[in-house]
Image (cartoon, rainbow over all chains, first blue to last red):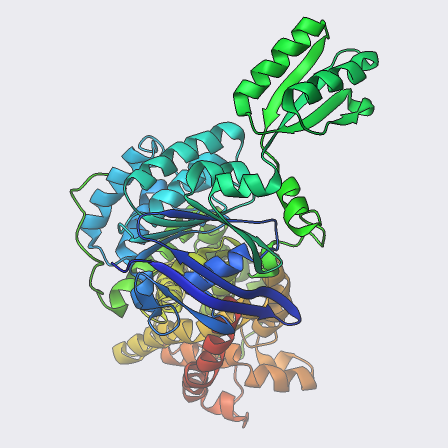
Length: 325
Length: 276
């Protein structure tokens, strides 16, 4: 296998006047996970569509699993799995039939495809639902089936386009657990997401895109350092004591505090993580200030974008990702 | 992960026919699981046979024979023309469910998706054709011609079912949504199947409509089947228009025209519609 199973140089894609990708370079080393992080319309899906041979770039080139996506699309397709943004399982087919069909289209024999489908249903906790039509599945089950479908032919490279968008927190956690096992398996993965938390949890490398451009790149820690790390937020029970609480917070973190009387809260950046949170809790307790909520939170994608680009995410029309279909 | 079916590297291609058949099988499962599609293929043709044979039939005069024998060629033709609608729906649904993208990311033969739809549609027509033939026998229709002509009639039905697919592909590629397909299909297919010799002799229509009806391939398919089954056609002997003089030939010309001229256009439009 090539050292970098996903390698892209200068990808440009235009839809009429709109530039969906404005020259993107990507390089994902074998056996690692790269997350492409960005808001709707940033060009994430366009990039995935090009790398999975669904769409041709206007400029630039890319190789996946060692083959050129434009010159050898079939060779690429034989080696990849794609979980598209909307789970593309066939709603009229049962879970089992879906997997068998995908297996057969990956050129397994019918018998091999059936065995493989059974294994995957088991592995993705869908064995009981395998005989029912997938149109009746919950969102989380449909995603799991979709993910199982991408693994039918043991792909070298996996593309997951917003694998957890639209899932409730429980289903998201379940899916993350499934993805963890994939990562252990050593598959090379490119995933897109709108959630910094998800990128942080799953990826070795994070590429932040906005308006078709890469605006930052690195591991989660270096990105967070760029945007100022975590925040500690305090919400007091009595708004009169907010000023006092802010002073305590500022003294412990040693950073600038932002007060918001309308929500009775104060926020300050910290680099001390959970231990900083404990210090703040203790100090507030000693001062006898009633606390309704105290939390440590990562910067949101919005805050990352605000810091990196100076403009909030989603500042434009909330289009369905580049209207690519 | 379980190692039992793992193998090193991707699997060798099993050929285009294998891929076409896998996708066609999916189309057949779809028909089985969609009550409305299944009823379109079973109950609807049965209803039409009974309705026209027993309700309208008494009021319609056929100069050269029995209405129920006249009816069968028309009703089969109508069902086949309408099958274009089913193809268009399948394509629109595929796009709606992103199945198109799923297929395109798989290592399958070029054209396997459309090929699968085509094969599925032809096979789907076997059921209504069988049901209508049996229902026809019950209401008094008979194959009065020779064996070779009867076989020719059924071959023509299958060939027409294959040819009309490309109209469905064109429609399904041009219209974005399943709802849009429904709207356009009914606006286009109802006049196409009713301004024809499907249910009444063309001679009973007003002059200008007669011209349209005579050249309508639904008429010629209806007439061709009637002639091959040696059933009454309702065509007056003095009629000189080419389609009424040679309905079998004219229908085959349509079949060939659809496959040779329309199919390549449809395939191009389809490809453009899926590769944005």
